[in-house]
Length: 457
Image 1 (cartoon, rainbow, N blue to C red):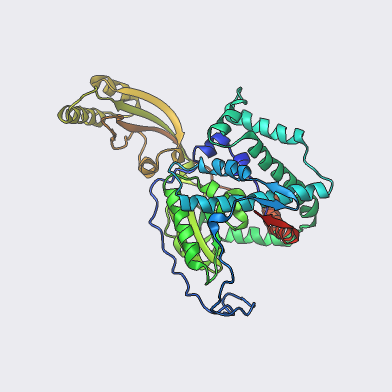
Image 2 (spheres, one colour):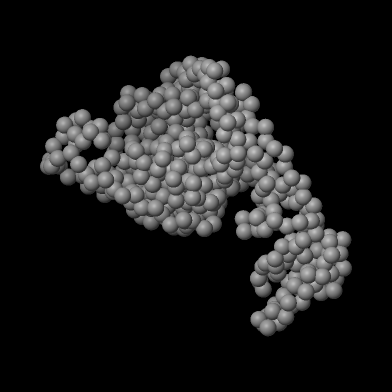
């Protein structure tokens, strides 16, 4: 697959601070592990003819293994692994348990091996990435996150236990892989016009049906290791519950081609999903996390980013003109005092006769009025439907607390979104091409692994 870093795709500061704040997450849907069967089970497709009961001739002590390797003569050190792990660990608000950290280190080592293979392949094909190119990308990323003080990127990376060299190595791997894909994969991908036209027709026929924008982390499993994979999936979910970045975990752990884009499947219809995932996605709400879900070949963790109707305007894109009327409470206010002030506030709000009357009502109780424009989808989720149901001049129910103050939102205007025209021919053509490039790139990387000489220390 085309491997692109979540650090260089999005903002470093946003990512390392934890990109995904999931809110209320659904309880994991436990996947039933298949009973371990014969190694020749037709379901697993295992044709190695292994005996069901085996005796190990030597014991493998994982405590004696170090997370280092030599890839075609190039050394990956423990420091390389430590610094890359630090980047990922910094996205998790909670402390990563030791057992989970071990699995994370193993995944990071696999990523570093792939990265090394990509850099080596680019050099072998006389397309090496220069230090100047890496520095340019690094400096651009630093400027995006630290503005006029890009040198603070070095300081930040060091503060989380990583380094500029570690991130630059990742950038070099990405640039090398992009170069290889551009020469050896993309030119050989073809999409016929008939395919695109057929997709456009299907899209128009599905107008008004629901689409779901999903994030997925896929972990492959067989009947022999299903229980262990399920436990790993549950640990990942627990880390996400504690504030870990879904994007970061998808990039590091997902075995699907969408790992390159943080697990983002884009907007899909239920019919495009495996039946097991479709049944779950249908019941999900935006911001909800569910899993692990058993599907053919392994387990999936789903995160619903958004949902909408195909080719229909989304009411959440409406632009609202609002007046926020708010009151605060003096430090040390008693519950009785606060309740009296809230009752006074509610009476004043009920007396408002349209947006032009807001300032008059606010003055009577010493409230503050702030006017602003905002799209519905930018509001807290609990408020979105409430605001969509209001008529011009109506106010939302009061909300807030003694610490944060109490407020209402008065609706003064609403500009509804236009109906969507849908993607055009060129956009769909590009989507199909990208999909096929990803699949071919995944095979390309697998071939590089198969041909590599890798020694573990």
